[in-house]
Length: 112
Length: 200
Image (cartoon, rainbow over all chains, first blue to last red):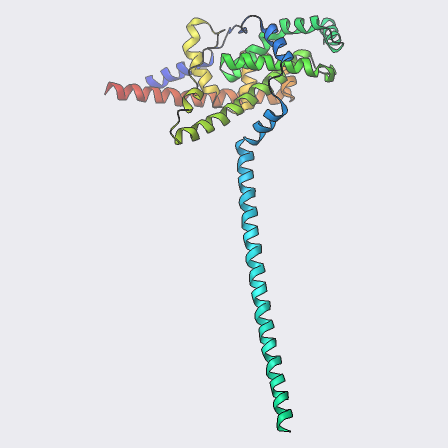
């Protein structure tokens, strides 16, 4: 109980510690430093672009995009390969059938 | 907006350098005090204050005078301070990754205890604890509390700066106080546990 009261008092003291706080002031000659900054802009366009690219969100998005492109290329390639193989096997079967028919015709002619 | 303020803005919009110096002189403490209370670092606050006035100089042409100059300055200062905090957090995350690879990056981004220069000597210790707790509450509550307690603004003025209603500010301040109480309670509980362990 006593501890709780102490804690409540400490919390109240902390919350009231900013009563009558005075304004903080910057170091002297702020205007001179601002004017120097206005005369020499800190960043150029390339630095801004580099800063944008090096943001974690942009980096992660870039990496994800690369992975997605890679996976889609891989799938597309596999799909095309299997399609060509199937077409080829169909063509071979049809060719074999044609050859068989031709042979049968030749046999018939020879027998006649 | 009062007469002299309107005149200052007009002169600055016409490119008169002296009026910019006057604006800096008039508002530098207000901007610095707000920023230092948010970022809790004097060097960063110094840098952000300069950025605020650079932006004022560059975009005074677009200032239409719908709000008070001080309101506009507060908005820029708060936006820049919060932006700087976000950048710092990003750097901290990067430093953490550096640490994983054996480089010692995180130490420089770990905040030390902040002592606001305007706090009275007898309140320094309690204020440092309060500033630590302030870092743990949501941004809008923290901004409302800072403007109220440190800048001494009333709810109407805070509402104008935060672009919200009087009642929303009232609610924000109440929630800020309650969040701070919770955070402070946790802090003091941890401290008393540490003390007990040390005594054992």
